[in-house]
Amino acid sequence: MWSKLRNYRRLLFIVVLPPLLLPLPLLVATKESRCAFVLLLMAVFWTTEVIPLPITALFPAVLFPAFGIMTSSQVATAYFRDFHLLLVGVVCLSTAIQKWGLHRRTALRLVGAVGVEPARLTLGFMSACAFLSMWVHNTSAVTMVMPIAEAVLRQIRGTLEPGREDCCHPRPDGKRRRPLVAGKICLHVRVHLCVARATALPGDLTVGKAMCIGVAYASNIGGIATLPGTSPNLIFSEYLQQIYPECERLNFGTWMALCLPISLLVLLLTWAWLCWLFIGSDVRSLWRRRGERSEREQATRKVIRDQYRALGPISGQEVFTQVVFLLMVSLWLTRSPGFVPGWAAAFPGHAEHVSDATVALVLGLLFFLVPAHGPSRPYESMISWEEFQASMPWKVCLLVGGGFALADGTKESGLSQWVSDLLSPLGDLPPLATMTVTCIIVTTVTEVASNATTISIFLPILSPLAEGVGVNPLSLLIPATLCTSFSFLLPASNPPNAVVFAYGHFSVADMVKAGLGANVIGLLAVVLAVSTWGVPLFSLDTYPHWAPQLNATAP
Image 1 (cartoon, rainbow, N blue to C red):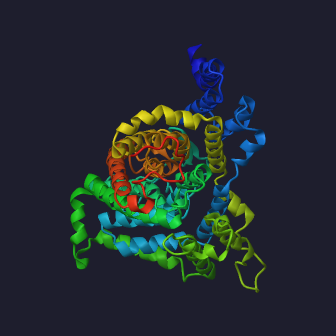
Image 2: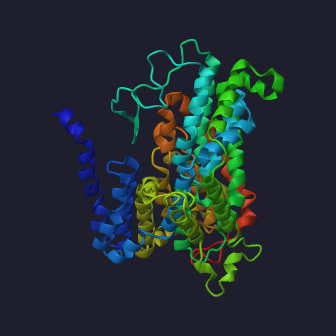
Image 3: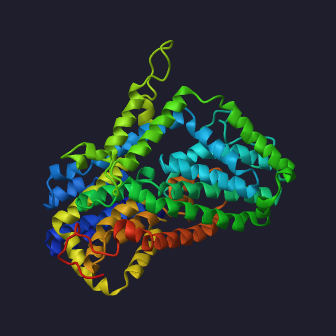
């Protein structure tokens, strides 16, 4: 009996939770209470993932019209915004980078330039993954870098055990992959993972731990450096345009000016932490003279050099992709830099109509138009629709749309104003204390919920909180957005962690131990940056004119 109930515990949770929350809209018959019911229901379902995240994101489309908060047409507009067009353009670029192998060339060159000593090798792979994740999806960056890292680790550890399967190649017997469930994330990995010989040195094993955990962390650390680097950044950017349309402080350039130094600082400190934790005395190899390399380090360098040479000369497709990438970044940086008129000023009267999504979409569409080969071969575009569709994170699109619909509902129902009034007594706390507590809470929640889910829940809460205590909303929204990416503790905390964990080079305990230090590093770096050079960048020391003035008090 009880075993059967356990099998249906998810269904029981789905059936029991809504009635438990129903007294809220029934006894307090206001739009605010009805919207609070939807917010709480979605927050619990998103956190527990009892049903797929995109399905929970569709709740506003059903419940808001039913509760009289918004019409169905109004809710529908939230599910396709400027964010989605920006994502389409970025994914077009990402698809071309992966198809033509530009990611391998970039990663191998970065790793080869940094060095092959254990600590340098770890830094090289972390730098490569962080750079790629600035422009492509974090999970994609990990899947690009890890096969190269795995080949290097095999060289470091020696040959594989006889009878063991190489995890970088398909099984010869054609057996199906077994699903590995890491918390809420299900990944298909091979039954047998790469295992080194029993004679492998302990130091070799710890290098693998540092390198693999570093790659997973670097994908999240690099993603915070640019607005399109990770989903929470884009969600925050779109939310800001939606709730505070007159805010002109945030653009690609100002975000990068704040977050690129944060990303570099967290990356270097996390690398140093992982080296101290796993590599230990081998860090002394950083100062070893070039002629003193060990035989194994020379073999590792040879593997990297051979893999780079195997790519051959750079192709025309790679050159075109590089040109589009550089042009896209340049146009993002110069569209509206703030201190001088940008190229958007060339559209008098409607310069604000042009956004970063316009740039990404125009250049992204080029990959569907430009031929991949010369006239001697049949016409084939740089990328096909099938390749784009396979790379497009449709799940994220729906999830983000649900977050935007939820934000619209809190504003239309008056829930955000009610929360603002409720939290106004917190204005007695120092702004730095409020920001620090916010960062700690967000960093904790993002360990058990997806990054996009976490920021979608907190943005509608933190905006009225900032208005209620009379501080610049950006002083809470920016650090919360950044801390959402610091999900370092568990393999299930985010997909990059789970992908790397599936290679089998470290245990959950190793990741927890490393993640505690990385979380502290990330949190302190964000608080430091936002309270120092972030203040003049975004005028965080004054209450802005673009925020509601009703509850503004002196910070």
